[in-house]
Length: 314
Image (cartoon, rainbow, N blue to C red):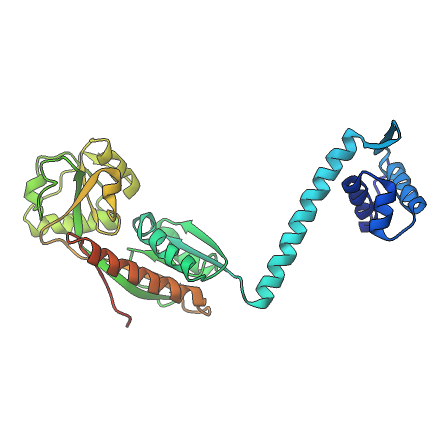
């Protein structure tokens, strides 16, 4: 078989013949004579070295190879149409892509709630939400992988612009029927003998929890170490122990049968949105910041136990 490149016209004729199951109908659709269609199909068969159609009882019947080829052509044709529509939408200004990153504490509940607000306002057409570790934030922004990063990690870097969007205290997360669940506030000494699910000392969460315990004149004793807040919440749901988290991570934890009780005299954990100073800020970033502030304000209003408060624009 000669592997010469197929022409677009050949592919178009084959596609129409397959769609109509008739050489005459294909000819009418293409605005050519039936003999021209027959010749084009015969040349295509010769070029490919296979039969594409058989005549059975006077009917044109595609071969198995023809059906497989048509399936690929139809898939590519659909993608081409979608690409064309996307390009025209971008040119009209009624569609865009917004890619951003978030670390686990923010991405669990705060980001989904804010993203729903963006969708309701039809901000951007396509969203890419990337889950990041704290050590990946700087490179993510510097190399333009996304427009911004939402996180509880503070970054002191001259090329990174930071905007504080909300603050939250720490909460103790326990099963709904735990003896501490009915408390209005929990002191670190109240969980001294509980199995604590927690984080390594040098992590953002670990440092915040340790500082809160130091204020109470205590040292944290961890029974189970985890890396991510999702794991801590899941372990509590399985009654392996209890955990202490920032208020953002524990937002709506009652959906998992858990209760978040404020921790007395806890440190304040801030939520930030970081952007790259040396690149123009995408308008969707401003919309995300506003939506995050609104979400934080709503959380504070809806739950009397909430330790979250929105920070005004500076």
